[in-house]
Length: 331
Image 1 (spheres, rainbow, N blue to C red):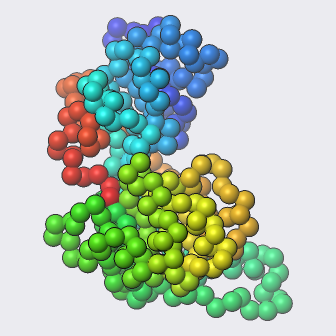
Image 2 (cartoon, rainbow, N blue to C red):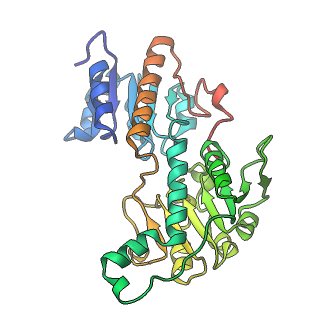
Image 3 (cartoon, one colour):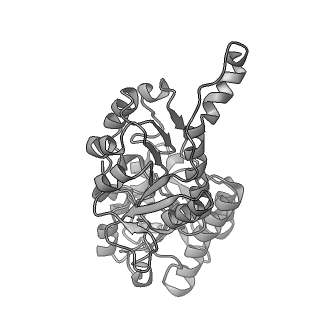
């Protein structure tokens, strides 16, 4: 049972960083819902004792779980996305929601460029070619240069801007699509994703997930990108119509894709696995020792700040106490 000196936290599922779980256990009275034999019965018996909740961006928390926590006051989420949380519902209950932006910008942007370079230059494919003995039988096919090309960014938020900064080193021309133009941006604004895709050699997705961006990249966008164009997704799998993407890659209506995220993770369509013009990574854009530690520190900092002051340190836009952050959402 909870100690009078330590707030009680519900952890929805195992977190990506074991050291964060250890740090939480040192500072709070933590119970993991995923460890309970009967989660519903556990919530019915103990739900009223939790004032805080810890989760991760892909997992979030279902509303039926939240409803079983009548005294919940704060959520601290490990990650930059918050589409797996019902923010209006949480707002209606006055629950503070903290998350971990900024600290992962560089690593996500780095992976976006790694995927871009890999799918363009055939790095993973050429590695397989060498290991499989193909070199002794012939030359690896000529690939595509990245430097000097046109880069279209969908979502010029924190991560999108970090991608654009890296593009300067490759002498790339940058344009972007956003919900609205970014004041003071030096990059050309496109009025639609289709317009941006038609212009771009590379279309990089760094937009926020959620219902508002579901299947934002559809067949029309992929056709506009065309047979010489490449798609890179380090945002959310739901942003892309995955069926349309498989068809476009299979039919070579786009040149290739680099994907870190998928519609139904961790399931990846068998058709994607069979293609040689796509590079696949298992949602690891922020998965470096440095970034994950910084994200863990932000999760802890949000909780520490809330229990000391009543306000999380880095609030999700749209949640209670988030006026200062309202303009900072990715995309």
